[in-house]
Length: 442
Image (cartoon, rainbow, N blue to C red; front, side):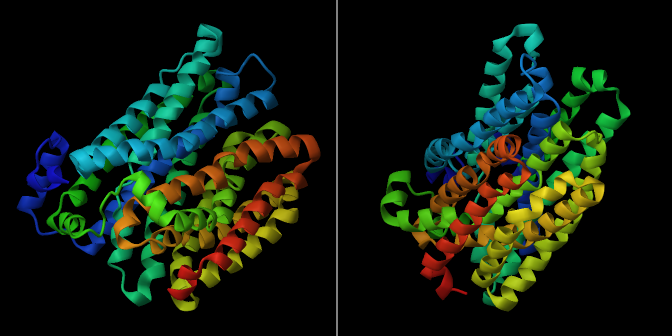
């Protein structure tokens, strides 16, 4: 904390951001919102660049020693490692935050994220180096997971703290806009490359370009977020105890109930997140003759619908209450999970119906998932508690969703893939029932 007040040990990026603040007017709420969107978009762009490669690239390049289905399942197993690593990253980077300041933590985390991501662009194939290719991919994927945990900057909590009572839902949805935007950009890039290049060229070198783009976006996002993190207003909140990074042990012993409930409350939306992004792409790629670029275009159009639904969630949460909205959408997601996956095997019209309806539900539910996390915690443990809750929600709700859904559908048919999603919806409804704190504040 001392580093934050005395500027000892600042990174050069922090110093540049401070110089910008010294020569310009203070950052207002609108700029904080923009910083949040830029930061979350960069993280989700990295996320989807890797996720799409897990379907289109890694089964053929890294797991070429086996059949396409097994290769994709192995690819999804490595994909899940980032979610397993995130809680450990929170432990590591919380210590960095307490000892060296949030700017140092954020700089290290985003540089680790950028390096881990761009390094994948240089990944050798299995045919070139054998099992070493898999080991290298695992190392970089774990690096991404650790870095994503460290990239938690508290800006979403800052927005929530400054939200008017009647605008809490609106402010809660702002950070979530980054997910559909990141998906749209990543899918568009892959759609262009996969359609413009031959399959041989795409697998040889074309797939590597999105990882270079991800690194460049991370650099821009780093400075945009530091521009806010080092402002006097943000530092003032830090000093007042509103966003203090408490120790993991302290947070768990004092707020463990809120962490558990908060981790399960958004499970329906987090499970649906991968059921309409990563899993359908893998199923269509493996079991239909449709070109990947065509389905990516459907995904892009659906993501625009999801973006509008995220915005709508802010209005609905303020009008009817966040708990009501999350409960209704969780029930709707449960109904969706029972038969909607069958639409993926019903041609282009079925795929479009599945994706559009799925993204509408996702936008409404996911748009308020950060609000669940932020509203539960006492002031002293809000910052670290929110980070831990987010890590666990992503781990249980989303980390293994593509693997489980594909494994179930390949063994028992498409309808069984909804089982994971249904379990997430049930967990959300139970958590919302237990979450009396959320009921009292809405």
